[in-house]
Image 1 (cartoon, rainbow, N blue to C red):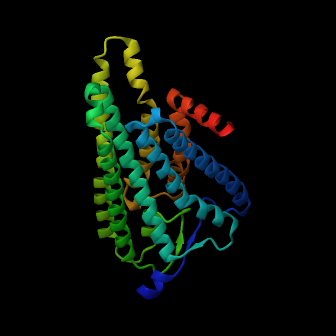
Image 2 (cartoon, one colour; image 1 turned 180 degrees about the horizontal axis):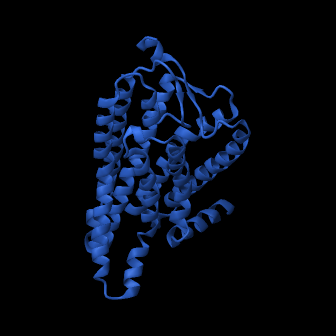
Image 3 (cartoon, rainbow, N blue to C red; image 1 turned 30 degrees about the vertical axis):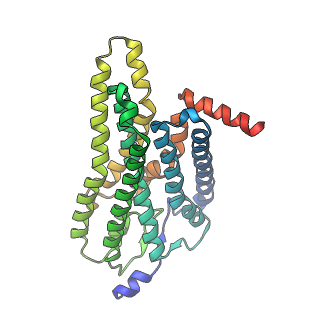
Length: 309
């Protein structure tokens, strides 16, 4: 099969399970999770935008994180739901690259937004007197635009790299969406150079915000430990708890999936880990940020009152 024909053929997405009896239950589970994700994140956005007291840098980044989570999940889950009820389970070559592009672009934007939120907490706790000066609205907007730009350039580079590969034999992707590792596995081209570039570039793009988060929390811990009262320490740490929980969920699964050689790729384990950051984390974010957040709870009550009035 020549390059042209191999590149224009459809791929087959095996999904989460090849067992026919599991398709309907899996559809029901992920459909409910998708609805919860949509409703939860839309509510977070509406609450933040409807309450002027929540027009602060922290909630600016949170509302944008919720929007990115909506887009991020929508890139993957609807196609997965269709395939669960379909017998063909195909995705076109172009559709596969488009899905891969938006998956990487939106996923990386999430990563940079989490880093921006860590910086926000760092300034709020370590330099509170200069918080309003440092975290000005135009700087927050610049951080958001920078996050989007870097992430989309990264995704474009990766997709252009993948588009140069040929797929001569199997077109069966052992995954529920077009991710880099399972697609690389199918290529009959020499992928050694691609793997090196992908690993190097992924390290540069993903590790940068992770190190930023790590540095921010190290500074926060040092500052908080200097607070004399236990109540003061708890109050400072409590403002970071939700963010830190999301960071652990998001980066834990990403590190497990992507920071390993292709030879160590495991289909079943990686599917479970991928579900964590593509479906579970976006669904959990609204609950994590609202359950112990008095500002969000107050804003939600205010929004409900507006709806019923």
